[in-house]
Image 1 (cartoon, rainbow, N blue to C red):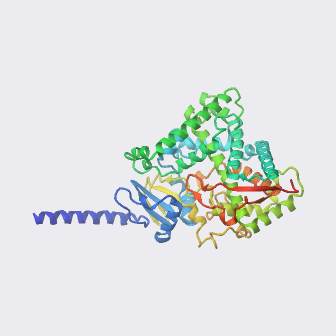
Image 2: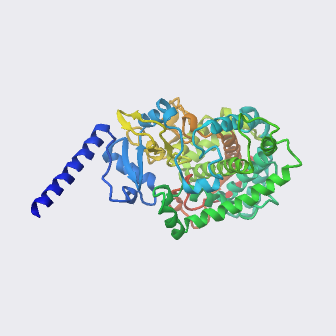
Image 3: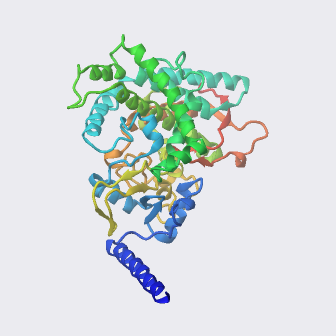
Length: 492
């Protein structure tokens, strides 16, 4: 009997040695040891970007983790990000299965979460031409100016009455108003989203950024998500958005000289999308990208910028002085005015650095075996690029926790995907296609807010009370809304 147990023990020991040898032979990146079944999921916590950054300090710039059943590699430095997003982009640019995005994108019929395939390539080509090209961005200039003027009118009335403005909410309203007109050809006012657009959009971004159990445990995970309520939340958001898409599509069946009209023509086969024929679900999936990405990111960038300016009076004074000296009593601020505002550009870059639009880039999945940073990464491995870690790395940035726009004064660095130290929109094939559209609104809104008003905190609030914590989601949401009192100046 004893000899039988010895034989069994020897077999198990030999099996473990073989597995370990195979792992070593594959030369996987180093990483923390995981628990049975859950792997390293328990180490992520409520703020995975911060937890992964701390782990990277111990295990290096490229880490291997097992998240449930999913092998995952995390990149935390510009060098590893460059290898993934540029050098090996063609092998690392697909998307893994994600439960909530599957629901909201109508089975991955969108641009953001679709796997890398011929459909995605045709869709991106069409989107860049018809919605995100420089020519199209400029054609919607009057929409941005009208919506910003309306927004500034509200701020001015609040200033005259001394009423604090919830900037997060009002900026979301501004951004939603622009995107509804640009992407859907209809006003936010009177639409299915008018009363609760902010709640729905924020909830959508949070559920899509959630770590759903179904993403890591293909069978039991769905049941877990039902009990946690995530599946129900995702379904509710999906139904709310679907009603809005239906309203927009119905409105545009008689007015087709716009983006939705273009999609409807493709659905009927009147326009070509390669060998693909769009269905109604394809159209709704594409509209999801236009609405959610367009509304949330622009609003968050402006809100975070104003947050850091109110916490840093020196920077606020310097950027307002630049604006008021270079624009000079101008009644109508235009997008061209941004060209001369060097310090404001630095302020925006520093905002992107310290509070990037996304904390972890939307996960990628390798389509082939690939070598990254000298390590072997097998096919079907999930890849996460930790933008927050790259932007807060003290080996790259001096005093990374401090808001110092001047760090960009003598540095030729942009945020459009070519400088891997600053990647708020990602890089490579999966870079955000709407940078130009979003930044045009960011520039116009900030120029008006900083030129026309001085700003103070509500009575009884101190600078140190201003919250700078983020909520983890698909985008970096501000935990507490920014409330400021505008002071109408002689420049208005």
